[in-house]
Figure 1 (spheres, rainbow, N blue to C red):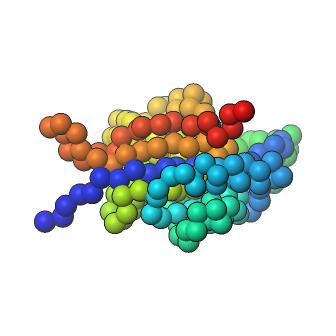
Figure 2: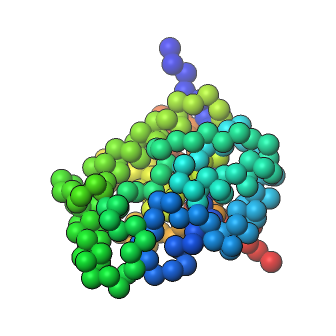
Length: 218
């Protein structure tokens, strides 16, 4: 018999990247900015006071660097997983300025496939891809042996995970668009999910905290 284990997952968006603060389409290879390095150190200080068993990170440089700051402070090894990378845009967009007309049009084509099942643009993920990856990521976490985990990931993909947890099979492209517009996930903000049962309820993922930024308080 497979006994399900209660667990808490602390999701951390990476620190600010060099492209977060500039009007360009973010590249997967974008590293942390100077401010992002400071933010990574701040979140590392915050998590030094949290008891957790494993540190998982997207391999994208901005996430990996953030995770490394946490690892340096807490002594954890980093487990890299492609499940937690940012949603993949067309690779031709990487580093292009927002003012590039062809890039802007490609971005609009991409967004139409993100918010509506079935379409696809170039080598980008579409709605079905990112929802499936969110499901796989949650399954990966639920079946790990640890009861307390830290995951360094990306803002847009974290919105997809939250939307899937909150809406389940009722998640549509329109609902996802609404989540993307209204949910803020700041650089190094902490979002907490619990995987547990409740009175007369089965094990499910439950949203506990959204975008905690208290480590930035004066």
